[in-house]
Image 1 (cartoon, rainbow, N blue to C red):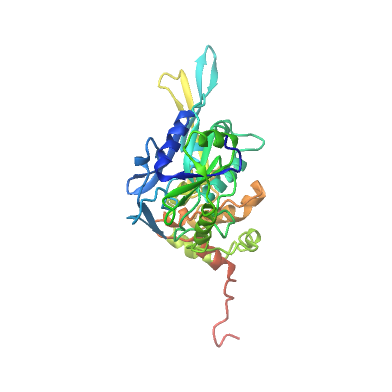
Image 2 (image 1 turned 180 degrees about the horizontal axis):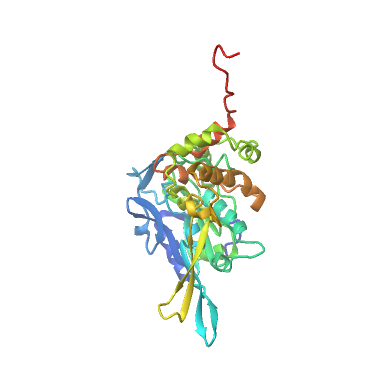
Length: 381
């Protein structure tokens, strides 16, 4: 029986058995698939649903799919969707209240009891789940989030390439997966054949792997897997100096760079929608026409929406400049005060999916540079 820490090799021809093993354990399998000219996460029934032989090319405000010259199953970087959606749905009914005599009886929304296996989680995404675990835990733990979290099986995949907007090494969140998984896979191509190095991370992971044809990892498999992660780390598309960043951003609220970036920002909310850790939401009550029932729904919101900071008398942050400053300062600085960690994992999604290509690593570098000191014009006494 496979135990925690065991390293086994799965030959390419045996990979479908892993999907079958997950389903036989009762998991609904979610993983990468091609849809709408992007690699997104959706239900996986067979290996044919995976983006076999596809990769993505990303840059600020740019995303394109391209064919690879091999049959890699996981030869891409992160796309527009994140695993946050599985734990914190974009729209969720929280409870239903029905009229009973002179009052109402409130019934919480029953949880979906079916366990879910996510296939292909990268290091930055597992780090993001650890961040949202802190967000939704606290004095008032979110019951829906933790009900789904407790039924989650994580199959991690080590990154075989870095995207042009990736900077996980700057945030110490990747590219190597070191924990937070039930099974970890490294896809190895080249000498020795197409294969996967599997590492067991939990008892549940061991039970699944026992259902898959494997052989002990060869002497060459471990070094090959380590070389893949090292190559990915050396090819990061971006970097960000995080030295003193927690103190830097709040200390420069009037830096002229905030105005510069605000002139480009569309306040479209794309960055917060694709971010794997942003958690802003709002709630609304939806009554029935006969007033006998009301439902409370929660849906994603964004601090870039002007009404998000609406208080009595108006919005606290009326300008795009103030909203962008709030988002970046919270993400990289004051998040530490709330949750003891940064809110950024360096996945680069906010850079790729910004329509005007705003790059937060460039913004931090610009704000780190002291603002120029105004000088009096010549001839001024």
